[in-house]
Structure formats: structure tokens, C-alpha cells
Image (cartoon, rainbow, N blue to C red; front, side, top):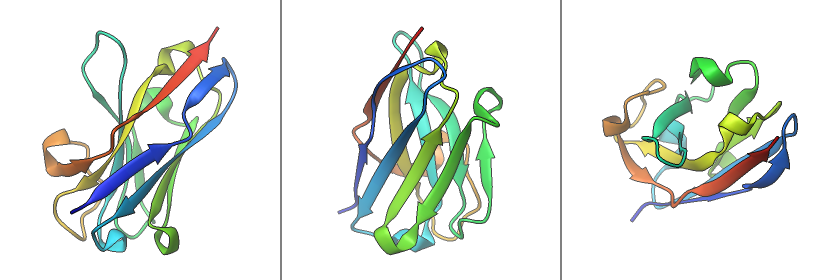
Amino acid sequence: QVHLEESGGGLVQAGGSLRLSCAASGRTFSSYAMGWFRQAPGKEREFVGAIDWTGRRTYYTDSVKGRFTISRDDAKNTVYLQMNSLKPEDTAVYYCASVRAPLRDYVKREDEYDYWGQGTQVTVSS
């Protein structure tokens, strides 16, 4: 059974930073690409960014490019989302997810992810 658990969310002022963590268990973590998604109130869940299984390639949606950074530590079975220069529009529940197939490049489509965390709330005040 694969389990993903996010942490690190909270309340921060605009311009501030947060680092989210996603701890994984139940699967050979180092073989799987990982992604971050978010869902704002009243909106559909959207892709934020992803990292390939090697950790060498990342991809971000345009609205977070240059502000967010995804990294992974395979020794700790953890993927991170470093969020800088936060804006009120970044307010959402953030989810990490694991790609269904191993040894994949970064993946944007939700239906290619099979395991999801429970989410962590990020609130950015203006």
C-alpha cells in the first residue's frame, strides 16, 4: 500500500515562502516521477509542477515558474515544493502525487498519477 503525506502548509504573507514536503512509503520511491497539484476554493484541481524519476528534470506551470522549485531526496523518500514570492492567488490545498508507471519523465496529466496525498492547506494573505 502506497502512502503519501504532505506537510509544511500554513498561513504566510504575500511575498513570503513556504516549503512543502511529501513523504512517501510503500513503493520504490526513487523509481517514480512525482507531481504537485493544487485546488483553490471553487476551482478544479490544477497541475503545479513535476519532477522526473531521476530528479534531473522538472516542469512547472507558467504561473509558478521562477517562484516554485521541486526537488527530491530519494534517501528520505521525500519530494519537496519550495514556494517563494507567494501571492494570494497561490492560496489552495496542495497535493503531491506519484506517477502510475515507473521510470517516467515528468508528467502533467492527473490521470497518469495513481496515488495522492491528503493535501495541505496553503493560505497567502495580502
